[in-house]
Image 1 (cartoon, rainbow, N blue to C red):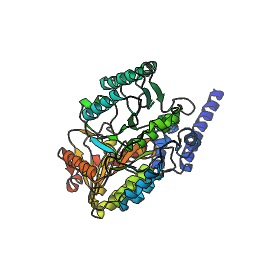
Image 2: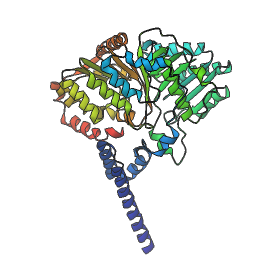
Image 3: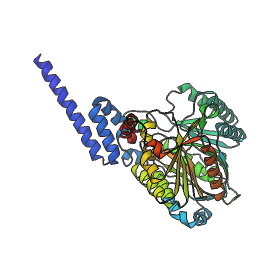
Image 4: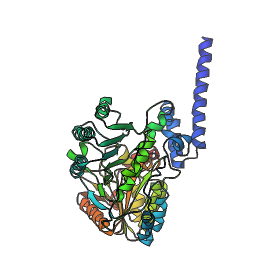
Length: 471
């Protein structure tokens, strides 16, 4: 019995030291203080579960060796002709600082002259994408956060397999964790047909925590280096047959250079060899319009959250209006301050989210931010009939952003994302009109009514907000 008592004491001491040691590590990592406090609450109130979750999801590896060596790749064959460097001067002077900020990312040249189609339904996007895939002659490059094993996913998969059988080079990157329910045979069938398949991150010990927490949230397709897709839509039936409202872009022209270069970086980062003739992936493109754009990637392989900084800069530079759509509104403190400052300054700041998202615990946390922003003059709308999965911004009839980045901690700090920044008055007008059309199915949150919500709801919102940095 004495041995058991001693053993119990040893285990209890080891347990306490582990918890205390982990708490010290959390503090020493010098993360965002709100994120640090959220982890401390988890470790104090649910210590065993908290230890496990912190090991998988909590450690900040943005500046650690793993991502510097394994994910941060530089693609040197991007066609940086003099004309691409000169394109930045064509952007309106008020946005030169934004261009400069984004140019510090990998391969984020200002690209000129693309034809751009804004797609606002899954049926639109899938019809256009599948038609372009069937027309492919040389290569198809695709990477998607979700590529479901459902009717839509199998239809696209069959096209890829058929094109590979015809001799088209098909490269396909999938996100390992998000597609964990997809059976391995789904990918084996693709490989057996000649499709080159790669998981963005390999789920292997001891570095499984990097794989689980830091996910590839990008949704990109490139066909023959001439046509590209970027936006919020994954491959799945939910975009075609359910009440999801999302936005994607179809691009022809120089803009595809940015998508291609970023895909090849990701392909290389996944441990795969680049094509033997990379130059052939970048065919000469005519300048067909006055459109200017930047394709910008962000992720934990970068020293700073450039996509969050770009969002804040657009809001800070706004003079008349900035309209935002996002499925998850869990903003960082700098972003809250930017929204508050713009609204107080008289800018027409509007936010559109869903009345009910696909993740129930996110909704009360998101609503905890409403009251202060409404008091500042910001207008908030909840879509009543559809889940708004679009990630868009439009500002002052000139700048638009459409991509994969949600307005939350995870997208800004932990996920690999990719956005398209458009400097184009015609497309800004179109994106503004799309926002206004969506407003018809929204209910505006009115401050005087919002202040009268029950105290029970207020408490739940405030409690869930404590964990917003971890969601």
